[in-house]
Image (cartoon, rainbow, N blue to C red; front, top):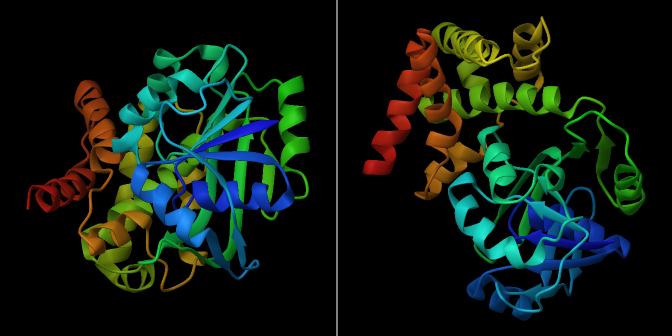
Amino acid sequence: MKILVVGAGAVGGYFGGRLLEKGEDVTFLVRERRKRQLQETGLVLKSINGDVTLEPALIESGENVEPYDVVILSMKAYHLEKAINDLRPYVGPKTVIIPLLNGISHIDQLVTAFNESNVIGGLCYVESTLNEDGHIIQTSGLHDLVFGERTAENTERMTKLQQAFSGAKGNYILSENINREMWHKYLFISTLSGVTSLFRSPIGPIRDDEFGAATIRSTLKEASSIMRSVHAPLADDIVEINWNKLHSIGHKMKSSLQRDMEKGVAVEGDHFYGYLLRIAKEKEISAPTIEKIYANLRIYENQ
């Protein structure tokens, strides 16, 4: 399958690199600066799962226009609109778009921009970042990519995707209920990102503090209540599942949103929390903890 990865950052560069390492036909759609950097250094992955330096095929928007079989999207949500415009010439009627963005509202944006049939569900779990040299640094054994039809069907194209992913480093999981998986991750990551950015701390010291732990639980409860109000397919015990998960991860674990704040760059506050609070307002649901998290991020961005 001809695979186009939009961007070559910490997520797209990692999974796209692993597919390229395996020998799949992978091209990266990148901006001029990143293209020059990759041409000079190669795509460098430094990972506890194995280091590798690759020579990827690179294009900029408008170059080598042809439809691809698969498009992997992994940019930050605030880059999505531009990415959609850049992507249009490369998406044909049968192109499968796999979005690995956090949150959920991007699905509607992609369906509106392309077709319902183009967009499947997707998410990933990977602790990776770009260093000052543009190398992808991946620091834990976790490197999961989950995908599936939003209709829950096991289609021929999912079988082909499984074959393309098979043998690449990482865990590539075909989900029979990707909609639930995406909402579950949204709840988990919005809680982790919210509290770590609010307290400017890794998760460990927050959960060790009485009031920090209470903030974790209130965030989980508020967010899940809002999600259920729009019939999100959450498991009945998802609050406890995520509570336990947040207590099982490493003491020094930071969210990518918190790392972005430390770098002084833009964050996905509106995509994560503005979306939830718009629902809360419409449904008249009280969400004081999420309001504080969102205010913290808005004030940060305004400064």
